Length: 319
Image (cartoon, rainbow, N blue to C red; front, side, top):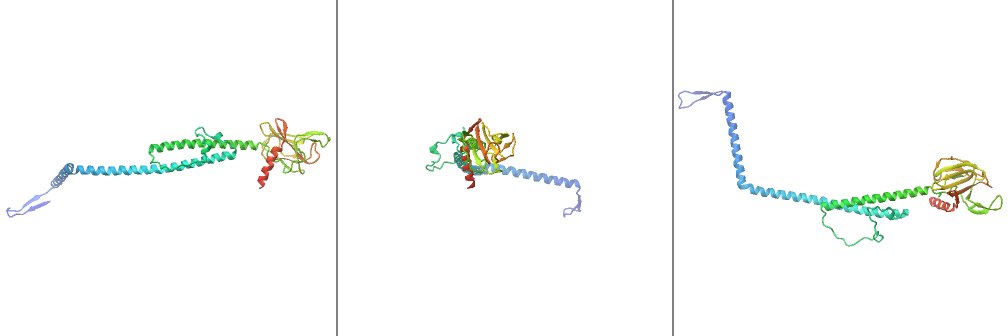
């Protein structure tokens, strides 16, 4: 690049030639100048702020920090209050579960003390239904108080779960026990044809012990198991005729005699109400009927108590 300088003081014009090195040197000088001015400006600004405006900035930062801390505390407290309300609702639900458990235990005929968990103290009888008093609003819960309340609620829930599990176990045990009691009518008919006890024998005319009850019914009428159990006897007996005997556990057995047909076998598990035979007149019999016995440890017992329960249950089912 050529630069021509013309001036009145110069006799002739001068020519200056600028090379790439001159341009690079000029750019570097400009960069150094800008950097120096920037550093000087920053130094003066910081020093001026430190001497004049720093206390103001500190107060401003302190105010902003206090406001932010207050907002954080308020946010946390609002969350704690919401959790406290939820905790109160859960405690109320737990109280309703307590009442429900007591009612279920009463309906099941189980004493509340029988299913009370050791971790949950028994509620006095006078305090079960009567609750009240003036409303006193508590102060806001702290995080520590809320944590303790949640721990207490967790222990109560665990205790109530154990109590309800114990109640369920007792109800299940009672249901199983009842399913093995002969409380289902073996034949849908009356059993007053010949009752349990001493009677005039229809063949000899002499007084003899009748160890069961007789159900008059037509030949082929279904005979059902009075309770669940295991079949232990299926045989042709000279007096009982076609005989089925079922073991219901704990020494309790039932016998079904004089049947025309048998639909089970030894070792079979039969359910309550399952068909096991049909009415007939086999063996020592004057006509078609079912001879039904209940025995405990081999000793005959009066079946009327079980049959009355079965009859009342079937009447309620029809209703």
